[in-house]
Length: 154
Length: 154
Image (cartoon, rainbow over all chains, first blue to last red; front, side, top):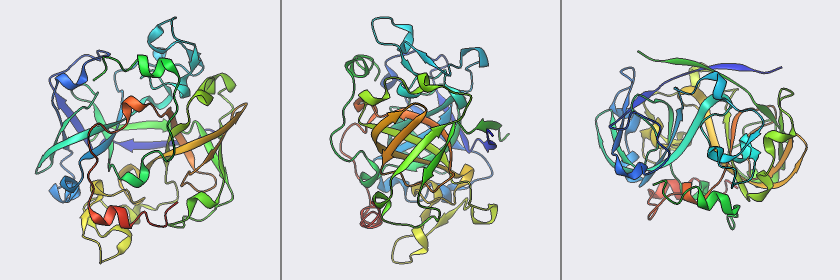
């Protein structure tokens, strides 16, 4: 019984990057403009937080590139073949991305960020303030490939 | 132009908690069982990570409880009125939850977790391994209410 649901973009990403390049995301500034059905009040108080988690859609990934089993991250055979839910690649069921970005400033319905790995026009599904109580509790352990893949990411 | 998309549950939460109580989520174990269209391969290698981010739906929240402007977190007037995107409450547009839980073990299509704040039957939209490179960079700043709200949460 797979349950299907509708979600609607709450806003979109505006940035100079129009192609999903793998690395160096910090080199481009990004902002999120809330859809017109919201007003500035929906962001009220977000500037008291340093970081926001952006939940978005990898909207340009075609069905044919959605993996539901396992693959090498970035197709790199030097890294182990791992399940799609053991990696963060964009070709995944539901095509959902989740990234913690730094809040630079708020201007009406526009949130200015750095460190957002999403291309221009990306539909945003949610924004959540980063609270310390929701960060990982206890030591964070990861395999070697997970550190290697991030070397030039930001 | 609000863009609307379909998302489909990749699995569901199984836990002893059937009501959305605010606090003490660590007191209940939880597991996620992948939908039958997946096989165990989709989770292959996830046990090399200590934590996983679970993206899910607050499926029991009715339309009438979805806030699109601002409100006091938990309705508590001792805390400031803040925008829905400056808090993590469940009555939010698209009803998406995102929580980092600790991976206890994997058993076929079942992922056993601690520290998941979702009730029994919750539809899961995605699972992402927690990589250090995706945690907040720089100091994390939050308002006082955000620390207070977490006092008894786990």
